[in-house]
Length: 217
Image (cartoon, rainbow, N blue to C red; front, side):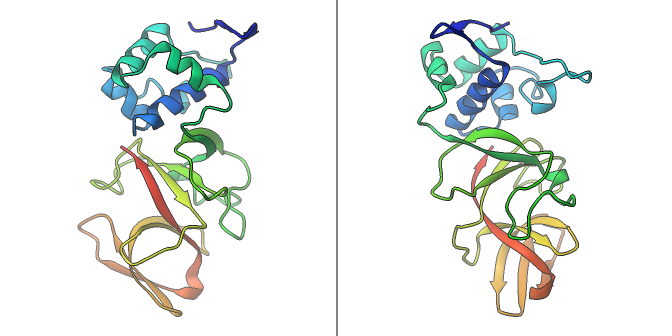
């Protein structure tokens, strides 16, 4: 297990996992994508594996870290730098599993993260300080997004025709689609599943809409 001293202090469980998240983000991958590229079980670095069912912290093995570094073409020294809070490759943003995005209280009225269930992950920096991330679960949005992919969402980014967006309805339904047309009265959304048709939502049905600005795949 990795529990080495750094600057005369003990590394914490969160520091090691955040460094792995940053390593994946720098390689343009999700944690599961990094594990897969490293020849490990795709769930090795998943957030659900970081704490046991009885609440004990689970640490990544030195072997899994070594394989991840090789897969990302990174040195241990660079990994140590990623542990620093001021690592310049990215920043931590709130992260939520997509399946929880429709839960009551997950977002405030303006579409910003709120309530319980959110964790943190390191992703490329954006100019929007309100950015957040959603981790895809299942194959609802395949083949565009697959299980384990992470999308970075920017509530402050301008939205144009053709952009991929996250939309939350006033009833709590959350979906990902491409914006086909937007008027004062309605949204026309091209759903990502090829078998699904264009969906029209009245403006009054939409709680918020935000643009996807980056994806780890």
